[in-house]
Image 1 (tube, rainbow, N blue to C red):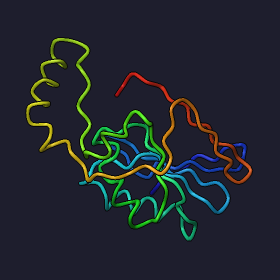
Image 2: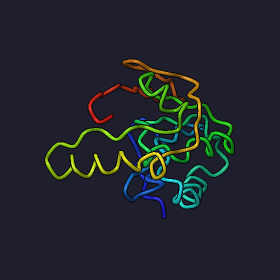
Image 3: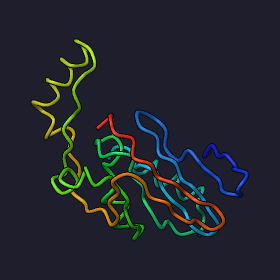
Image 4: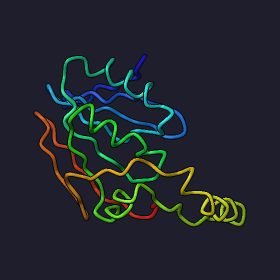
Length: 159
């Protein structure tokens, strides 16, 4: 069962995938927007959650918060099956083309050690099928979604 929130604007937001990385579906009128896709081993759960919430509505857009594997490993598959456009940061252009985003530095001794070990084997474990974004944003993007406006704001720091 998808957990949903109804907004004052009439839109609904649903948690269609939860776990190490969450994915949300925004319903605005007859259009849906997916935020992130999770890891490849969660594709079936993601699709089931999306199908439950969107019904016959069309998924028009996949919005990626960033291109770490746990947020975008299903992007290429979703783009192919749903025929949707992808919006992502312009800073991730090379990562999307290569199918790999290097892990960020750790914030303390232990996380830094974990990241350094992960970078040695990261290509095998943390890669994803390369894809191309249809819209690359640098700072901000406003989308008119039915009677609701969606504002995407770049917040650098995590990747």
